[in-house]
Length: 73
Image (cartoon, rainbow, N blue to C red; front, top):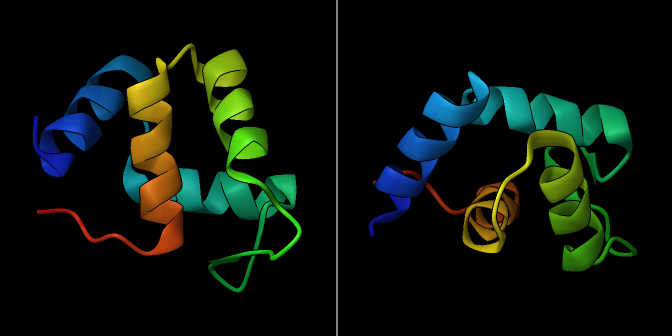
């Protein structure tokens, strides 16, 4: 599955766009100025996404990759 397909599936499930997740991550304190804070671990972000949005591990990792700077296809 392509990165874009992961993002499309996440949007269909949650109704949230990539920009929404970026804003939510900032609000949650995981990012600052669009960058993941050095002290934040991937597991903290994926656990949040799994709990809050009921995402599977692969989809949560796609959002983590997005927050790390990966661009949609």
